[in-house]
Image 1 (spheres, protein in one colour):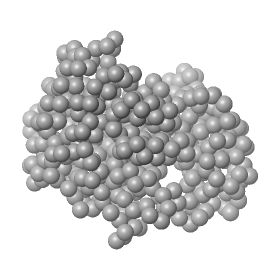
Image 2: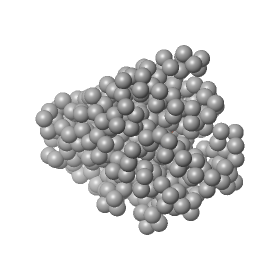
Image 3: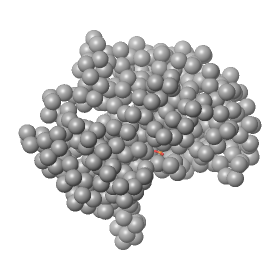
Image 4: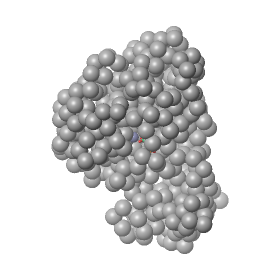
Length: 424
Ligand code: PGA
Ligand code: ZN
């Protein structure tokens, strides 16, 4: 039984306050969870409550959310069985009482929801991935390493937000981690040799001032080859365009040019022909549904098209997308929806519709590693947690190493099967 719930304000990887929650069970178990925070957030995400008190952290404090955990959410679930996750999450949603969790804040709710799950797992003496995924949870994901950062995550001129390495040809997760890391280090040398800065963006990738987005892909291909791998066979590429960020009034502004959605779609078709691209996320803006449909018709059989700002891990928006035949993959961010149960519902819905799902960190992260367990529990087979550098990013990959070790011979690295549409 849940005996007590506490909370505090801690810092995230960008030096902004965030919520940490601790749950105590009547058997003495204590577990904690911390909440991430985005920068290029979707308009339809659950609400992140910040104090707005300019005298503290420039208004970004989260003492109101912390107070809501202590005064309202905690007392409402005390005495409830910790393993009754759906009941707990329903109570949390009811206490808030709003559609988008804006009264007490999705950051308050998510912290409690995740901490309860961790405490219940610990109480059952099971690792979180097994507690949530059952005895058949055994799929280790392909990690998508965001090695070049642009958009809202870096102060360079690159419009696209994320350039991924996806080591699909490795035999094991640990091998894929090594491959990606080796290429990351070679990439640094290549950028330096070409006279570009190698400072890091928010997600641990390099943030060079490249003249065009294609140039980013060229650097990745060069680095993969120089590290001794074959692009496409061993290590594929991916993009998170985060197009909502450069969309205004029906016009996309990319590489110093104005583009219609149709022109941009043609451009993506060209990229997929020229590079081994397994995934493109948020290729168009979050409300550009008709053009998303046209994009999916043009490219959906050739590569994975992920909805992040488009779906915001929201089962209602995802159901709409499935009905319209828009995109073919769901990005999964626990704080976009705010409870573990709703997150798992979204993943289930995606899988039942033949969509893939990718677990994701936020650009503002903490040392919390819940998403590593979630990707194994759901068998989703894909995770993005930034570059293989910076501890808040690497913490998730390191947790996957521990899970791989725990599973031993039962572990299966999904490899290229994670991307059933990829034909490269
Ligand atoms: P965010 O970016 O965490 O800043 O929203 C991540 C993403 O767009 O996938
Ligand atoms: Zn995204």
